[in-house]
Image (cartoon, rainbow, N blue to C red; front, top):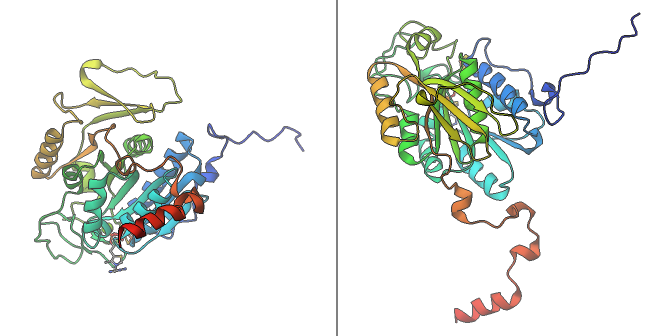
Amino acid sequence: MSDTPAPAKKTNRIGLEMASYRGSKTTLCAGCGHNAISERIIDAFYEMGVDPKRVLKLSGIGCSSKSPAYFLNPSHGFNSVHGRMPSVATGAMLANKSMLSIGVSGDGDTGAIGIGQFVHLMRRNLPLIYIIEDNGCYGLTKGQFSPTADLGSKAKNGVVNDLPPIDTCALAIELGASFVARSFSGDKKQLLSVLKAAIAHRGTAMIDVISPCVTFNDHEGSTKSYSYVKDHDEPLGEISFVPYFEDINIEYEPGSTTAVKMHDGSSLFLRKVAEDYNPSDKMTALRLLHETSLRGEFATGIVYIEPDKDDFIDTLNLVDTPLAFLTEQQVRPPKAVLDEIMESLR
Ligand SMILES: Cc1ncc(C[n+]2csc(CCOP(=O)(O)OP(=O)(O)O)c2C)c(N)n1
Ligand code: SF4
Ligand SMILES: [Mg+2]
């Protein structure tokens, strides 16, 4: 028997092992894009050293909305009603603004039944990482077209979609979201950088992740299959993210790189493919989304960013102490004030 001590387990900067960021075993189909996204979420929160007990996981209904069970087990979670996650997230963040919220939705959950809630979430800029696991179909109810399915896309049974898609990124930019990205579940490196930047962002970070449904939407004729997305992915450039707790030690050419200072002091470097692409310009971002979609392509990366925009909590001018921690005496007006109000109503 060897008396060599077992090697110490690897921990992150707050002393937690990767196991503290994992969730329950997935019940989704093997190969589902949603599982790869859960893996990247685990990596991003571990590498950023976020305390999972400070995290609130939210979702609606769908295969995608089951995902929060498969990451960050020690976090708080609320699996809400179909399309209604934004209102639950809003209530939760107003009650306790010290939490870091991550919501997972589907393209059906967001683009169909939940579109009304999505619209108001984006215009409020609530601090929330909002991920759409976008497979262009209702996976949980056996593959019907969702509102992000492309015009002319074919279902497994041969039916052709005759409605134009909603581009959730364009909609989010138009409505006022301050961080809008598109990625692909099969692009580990890009998705991890986008997620880390979203963790550092304060405001709504809307990430549409194309995430193929291997059971109902991965055949020829689908524009959300693994092979179609691999052939039509147009990365906007390379993303390097340096968290505030690390030294900036990356090489970049100033001429072709945009450096963005994040709310928490982290740095985001966007090495552009197209020289004229400016992710802080709304019109450029909307034009890019429109032009790539006309070519049947997906632009991936951070499409739009406005790191200093006031979020919903700032707009409401809440007291410093999270509302959930205020005492009864602090929230109830004194009797004299109530008497005065009553008197004024006579
Ligand atoms: C109020 C209500 N209407 C309809 C349903 C049925 N339903 C469950 S999941 C779903 C769509 C899921 O699609 P999506 O959000 O894209 O998630 P995916 O399963 O594709 O990940 C529907 C219509 C429901 N659960 N509740
Ligand atoms: S049905 Fe589709 S979306 Fe649902 S778990 Fe299976 S592969 Fe994923
Ligand atoms: Mg879906």
